[in-house]
Amino acid sequence: MTEVVDAHGHYVPRGLFDAVRDAGGALPSLDVVRLSSGRDALAMPGLDEVRPMPEILNSATTSLSWLDQQRIDLQVVGTWADLFGYQLDAGEGSRWCRLLNDLQWEELHGEPRLVPLAVLPLQDPAAALREIEASHATGYRAVTIGCRAGHLELDDPSLEPVWAELAARGMAVVMHPSFHTTERRTSDLGLPNTVGRPHDTDVAVARLVLSGVLARSPATRLLLMHGGGSIPLLWGRLERNHAITPGTTDPERSRGCLWFDSVVYRPEALERLVSFAGPDRVLLGSDYPFPIRDPAPRRVVDLSSLASDVKDRILGANAAAFFALTRKVPTVPDGTQPHPTQPHPTHPRREVITTADRRIEVDHGPSFALPQVVSGAEHLSVFSVHDERIRPDNQAKADGAPLRVLDSVAAKLDVSKRSVEDMGFWHRSTDYSEIIICIRGALLWETELGSNVLRAGDILVIPRGVAHRSALCEDSAEQNVLVEVKVKDDLTYVGPRP
Ligand SMILES: [Zn+2]
Image: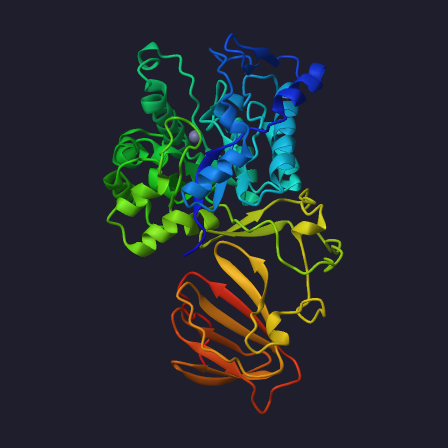
């Protein structure tokens, strides 16, 4: 079983109110106010109501224990939609996003189970572009945005460079509707949540699709909340509208940009969503910690009649691919130093982006300079399997285990240094297929499907569920070094045939 990921949670930094108080003149429109209930709230211009900040939003500990109860490993967390700050003027909006992104990163970067999303000052596209660069340098690999930026619709031509930049950097986008509504008929009975938010998503997606904005940035990865509102059911209507409305773009050209969370509560709704979106494009979500959240988010998946491999993908693998998730703490032995980053030779103008199995070529023009996104060596670690400090258990013990050096939801990388004696047991993994790469020496690999001597440079693929073990052989060296990649998916050989 792959790690289970909740792609739709929320978190607000504990230190936010203090930081706003400290910012003083830098954020002149923001105010921390004490409500009659005795709770603090952030007064932000443009909101029709100052809502108290739910305290549960600030507690990573509470989030983690809820995740434990729900048997969820990781949660992707966006900010509270009240805090997007699109009503602030350009300079203040830009300072606000920087402060929020910095604080969030500071509080969560040491917590591998909570993955934060950056906010952007979309009301000023130039500032948004700067914040994309800054937040990417901080370490963010995905952003969260509203369904519009104040009065600016997301398909506004001024925002096209922002879409293009996010796509070019491979940063995923989570689009989250806001609570506030100016329509009186949807302002009571809980309707802002029930129909207001999905409607907000419907309008934003319809505009992005029909305007051609997404079709012009086809590498965009856009995750829609609440099952995408009514979009899956409205799709035919959007297509029909395109057929009769000149100047609109065929919705099908944008379909490859859309992903959906699973917050639809009913199994049959999830099944319909999967039949529209495809098995790779629906991600488990909860909307934690708000009252409307799905109180048991795995249940809708469990109760559905979807195939078990599709359920697995919804629970984790799809989110791992969408957010390109990697665990933040690699288990490389202490003292292993990353190699110093080499300077870029010449800056190519042409960039090839591969995303969602597509290859997209972008010619950036003569003024293009590769952004210095790798500011910290922690993002670009190089290590040698020959390093003496990489000392797996099985180096000295035949029954010892390899050493895990890289870990992600989708794949694991282990190093083995078998030297002393044969593996004294058969190993069968029902979770992973294994790719065994021999780096040095040679070993005999016995499997249920047959045996092979693996020498330096050879690669053996052991399908999931097949028992196997290794033994020393004539060509074995004093130290036989192997890299073992464990992957959840079934593997298909697509290389050249002898
Ligand atoms: Zn939400």
